[in-house]
Length: 320
Image (tube, rainbow, N blue to C red; front, side):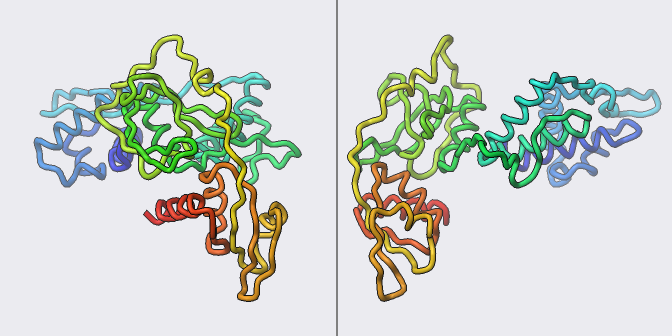
């Protein structure tokens, strides 16, 4: 769903909740942003679709027919819209708090924090602070979803839409296009995988997100993908990690910066031009690229070429 449509539906719900009397379609058209620029027929079609979509997700829109008016009116009864009182056991509330903590660094962090705020507003204790730190304990769980492909693939799994992306195989520099029916996104040993049906190979496959390059394109209509019954997504990514040879990357580091990188380096050679040269052990160039790109202008990968190119792709993707 596009951002514009999401905002229009949200504005429509707010409008119908806030009104004290039923509003006609024309009054809604004038009051809700997103309708006022459309022609009469286009507005009627869009308004009908919006009403149907809201009803499909459980939002009750009442149609009120006044004998003194030519057109029906619309409104949302607050009593029908609001959720009943939510009662959670302490262990259930603790699980919700833990889930929000796990998703802190993911694209769902904002939604998780908002859910906790609503629960606390209703008087429920989730044993989980809201804010930047979300926890602060000695041991904290994290789900790191910094792979650029994650948000688009998550949406595709949710919407059951086919995706296409460019993929670099393990230990290979060649990039090939893949068309996949996504079944789920799974984390294993700190790495994220897409599990699904590869239309090019006509077989179930798992793809590591860090090897997806460029943009993920959603194809066709929502609801086109059907996940087979009994499929075990974890088993699909349960294969042993591919053996990858450990190599050494040469990285220029601006003097006076990146203390953490310096501590992890095999060796650091002082320079005379404002830059030092560090040697870093790595096996996966994409994971190294994610780390180096996060350090911005304070580092420059010199070699090997595939690690340097991986960093350049990350930076170009960020600019795009």
